[in-house]
Amino acid sequence: MDRVSPAELQRLRGACRRSDIYNHRMAEASDSPDSRAPLLSLFVGARNDAYMGDSRWRLETTINYLGENLERLQRQDSVELVVCDWGSAQPLHAVLNLTPAGRRIVRFILVPASMARRYAIPENDWPMALLQNVAVRRCRGRFIGQTDSDMLFPAPTLRRILALADGGCVEGVETGRGFFFAGRRHVPTSYVAMRPPLHEISWVVRRYGRALPENPWFWFVGRAYTGTGLVLMHRDLWSECRGYDERMVFWGSVDLNLAARALRRSPWVDMTRRGFELYHLNHHGPGGAAGPSRVWNPRKFDGLPFCPNGPDWGLGDRTFEEFVYPVEPAPSVPRPAGPSAPRWDWSRFRHLLPALLTAPLRQTMTPRAQSSLWYLEAQLRARPWYRALSVLPDYLRRWAGRK
Image 1 (cartoon, one colour):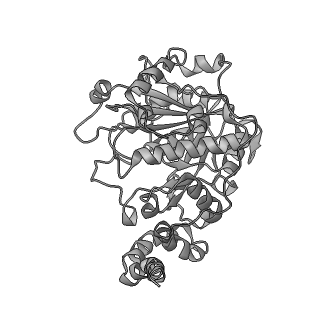
Image 2 (image 1 turned 120 degrees about the vertical axis):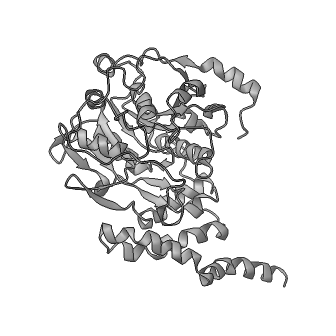
Image 3 (image 1 turned 90 degrees about the horizontal axis):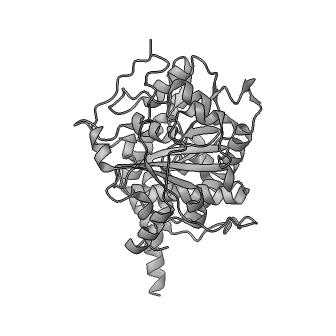
C-alpha cells in the first residue's frame, strides 16, 4: 500500500469530524451513550517522529494486527482504537500504511503542534499523563483501556477482553467496578528492527509467544506488579478518578500513580495469568535501557488525592479535530488466518534465538530471577561465537549456490 499522496490527503480531510459530542464530561456521556459507541475503547498516545527506532512502523503494525484479529473474530464494531496524535507536524494518519481492517477501527485526535508546545518543558516535551487524558476524555466505549502504541493483541486475548467487558464477575469482582491490568511479553528489539511482515509476526506470536520474556515484575503497594500491557476500567471509574495525574510532568510512574489511587475504591485484578497475553514490539536497548537520560517523576504514592485534576482534565474544555478513514464495509466472513508457517528469512529469525534458547530456564524461575535474563540475553548476542553461528546458514547457502 502506497503512502497517502497530498491530493488524497486533501480528499480524506473531508472525512474529518469534530469531537464536540464527546468533549463533555465523561459522566454525562456515559449517562446518555451514543448509539455508535463501541463496547471497548483502547487508547494510545503517539507522534510522527522516530522515537527509538521506526515508531511509525510499530504503530501501523499494532493497528493492522488489531484490525486483522477483530475481523477474524467478527467484532470490528465492538472495539475502537483512539490515537492521540500529539503535536505531529505532519499528521500520523497521512503517513501510516494501514490495511482496510486497520483503517476501520482507528480514530485520531489531532492535537496541533502549537498547543503541544504550550505544555512542553525543557526536561520533557511528552506530557504522558496529559496526552493520555486527552484520549480518555474522547473515548466512546463502555470500557476504556490504556495500552501502548506498539502492543500486539492476539485474537484469543481480544476474545477474553470482550467477554470480560460484556459483564459478569472475575474473582468475585463485578467487571464494572474492577481495576484490571495485564502484563506484557517482549518481541526482541533486534527482530523488531528488521521490520518483519505482519503475517510473520502473527505466526511468531502464535508459535513462540509463550517463550518470549515477560516484563520484569516488582512489588508495589503489597502486590506483584509489572509494566502494563493493558489497564482496563469502566468509563465511569475513569471519570471518577479523573484519569492520570497531570501534575506528573516528567517521565515515568504515571501508571503506578493511577493504580495507587484506583485501588482505594476498586478491587485490583491481575489478568496476566488468565490468558491475557500481550506482546510488546520492543525498542529498548540491551539490558532494557530506555533511551536518552530523563528527569523522572517522584515515586511517592502515600497521601495522593483520589482526584488530582480539575473538572477540565484531559483538556476537556478544548475541542480537537478528529480524523477517521473512509473505509469500505467490513467483510461478512472472516478472512483466513494466513499461511500456517511463513517462509523464514534466517537473517530475521536468528534475532529470536536468544529469547527462545533461554525460555525453558525462564519458565522455571521466579519473576525477580527472570529479570536478570535481560542482561544474559544481551551478553549472548554480543559473543563472537554467537555472531559466527548466526551468519553460518547464509554462508553455507552462498557456498552451495556456487557448486
